[in-house]
Image (tube, rainbow, N blue to C red):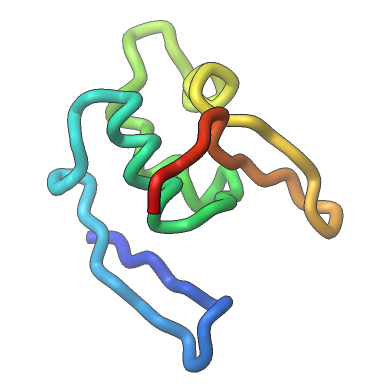
Length: 86
């Protein structure tokens, strides 16, 4: 199982986030992930989306389609392409 660590709160918060508990619908999965955390690094989000990849699809292709990338403090991060209801 994987855990999501929120270092932006004080003190740090850790919550259990299991892939099997997430929607199998790609858009719903991304919407849910972006409500949990506004910005993700590729390394952080990959475990939660890699099972959505088709035979010839990469996580990078999914991120290109469903997320917007930017650079924050020299690190590439991804956020939602559409407004996320919190």
